[in-house]
Amino acid sequence: MPRVKVPRKSTSVDMTAMCDVAFLLLTFFILTATSRQPDPLDIKTPSSTVLFKVPDKDLAVLSIGKGKVFIEIIGKDVKMLTLQKMAALYSTQFTKSEAERFGVIGSFGIPFGNLKQFINADAKDRKQIEESLKGIPTDSTTNNDLYRWIEQSRRAVAELHNTEMRVSIKGDSEEEYPVVRKIVEVLQKQKVNKFSLITSAEAAAK
Image (cartoon, rainbow, N blue to C red; front, top):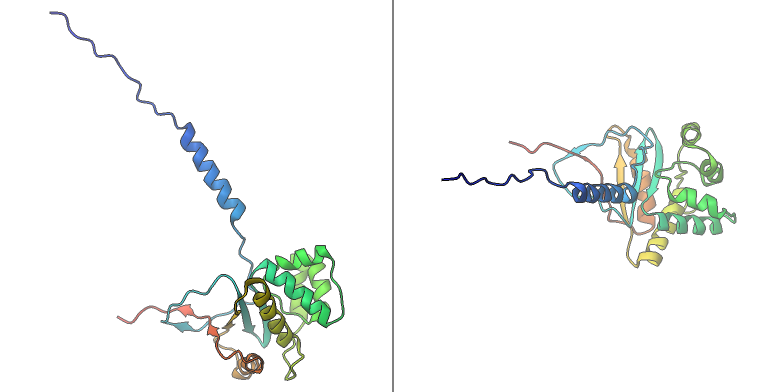
């Protein structure tokens, strides 16, 4: 009796479609990702067991360390509109290019009078400028730079997103209390009595 010969089939799989999908996904994530901006200070935050995710929009983060105060306004559109409002307050002007550059800058801690120089500098020079200055002015008046940055960014968030801006404070665990107290007073003068403190996660008690 003749033996039946089973035809051989190829075991190779066409991976072309899978490679195309993988590269499409990789391209999507690269184009939509935002690079993390370096922190202005090496801040060691106090630890806490409370876990609460910081929102990624409509937020301003105040960083405090070594007696200096920095502010980060989340959202390019909010930053650019805030800059426009601040420029009107201080009777100055910024070009469209300067506004675009400011929109992608993270935290900054300089007096408003040095802002144009800060925007037009490269990353290395910006760090040197910040180190040579004493952070954002936070004197006891209601027209200090920090007061105005918070006030105008709140107005920008309300105008653009029709919501209220949140404020988070990121302070060094060894920072002296009077500096933190001064920031709280600036917020309270604007009736911002609800804000969050950024801490590092602490291991849960066993």
